[in-house]
Image 1 (cartoon, each protein chain N blue to C red):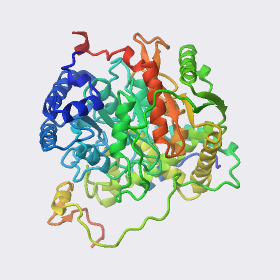
Image 2 (image 1 turned 45 degrees about the horizontal axis):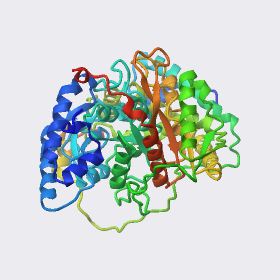
Image 3 (image 1 turned 45 degrees about the vertical axis):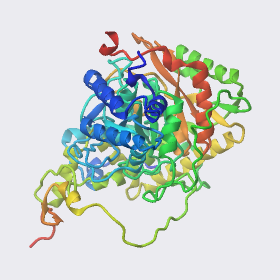
Image 4 (image 1 turned 135 degrees about the vertical axis):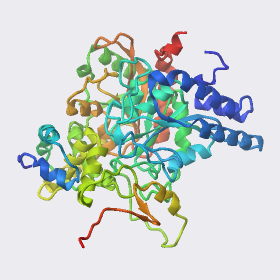
Length: 96
Length: 497
């Protein structure tokens, strides 16, 4: 594993979270400490081991591609921070 | 306690009385709501109390009983962790970002409980998005341990645990990702049961770490846990990971001895490290298992010590992905910005608390380009090794017994460094990574560490995948023979009258 320190600003940008200077300092330290702990995994020989994504028996799950009842549109839009008619309203995405 | 105080009764007794028309669901519900009014001010178990909805459900249950139906949970007061949806109620995940969100649908597990006659008393506090081990990460309120109000109830399902311990519900629903049912059960003198991964549908459980999350009950007896499990377990087409297998009812497989069972004690889990009193209590618990007829064998889980490191990569990775949906567009909090990107950044900055941000950041890092193989994939491989350890162990035994937590309930603000809080789940995480059914059952009381009143501790029992019946059956035998839970009552003002 790499021993790089975390570029917390880059990670926060990927995660879409605005951090204060105080948070940047605090999380850099805390995440650095946690990564020291997880480096314990380097001691395990995992060369020839398959990765586990999910532990219990599983196979592809199919369902018929047919319409069925879904959530009521009006009820869902009730929860929207901002709406316009039958749509979620968001800030402009494409410049004029 | 008098026989007329229906808040003292468990789910089995309440359902029997309501089905037998000795008591109405409405009476039991009114008594429970009165209890909530008298004690929840000091406990703080509930984020919302559903007085009106509870009475509507109670009257429906009484109507069904009057028409000749028999319901497995008739009139049983239910506390629902606030990360499970119940249509028309606020479902906050104890977060700012969902503080005002009203669920437009109902989680399958909750729907099955209500269909079986349970009455929804309220939605309970938890660590924000179920991330924590003390309930202290809630953005919306403080929950206190009913056995010592100066201490935490455990977490993340601490509100449901406190509600059931304080007799503000007979059954609490929790979710367990790395120990979030079992640890609060141990802290609050309860039975806390996490079934096999996939046994109970996760539909309507707001996702934290999808390969680990599992719903389960917190109750005052093993029998009540089995009743709730029997109602909730089983395939659900709305959750593609829910198991397509028949569930054999566990409530009919409760046993009174452990004859013929081999119970494994884990060589690497030395209870001496937990201090003299805890060590003695766990040794006594193991002796009791033997006295009940079990054969004790030593088993080894050599990679279990890597459980924490594995978990704190996998769970945050999945959390960073799952919580990406909270972006201020379709529901929940929105904090405006100069453009949409600033809106995302500001919404998530204001909407998430420190622990959730920490885990999103760690997970984002572990999944990011250049680090994915070194962290995430390595953790997934470690997970394989941990699961294999259990497979080998279960070749030698039927069940594994070990501590449920490394200490009893601690005081508020005692774990200021994040990693010291993560260590609380040392004994529960390996089972979660392996997807195994496991539960905590009360096994004694301790004043270790200067506690002014004795505090409960829990024995964890763990079974192979799908062996819930065996697990609950054995836990029932241990509980009936030892009765540790009955030794003390909650330390509430209402109790001192």
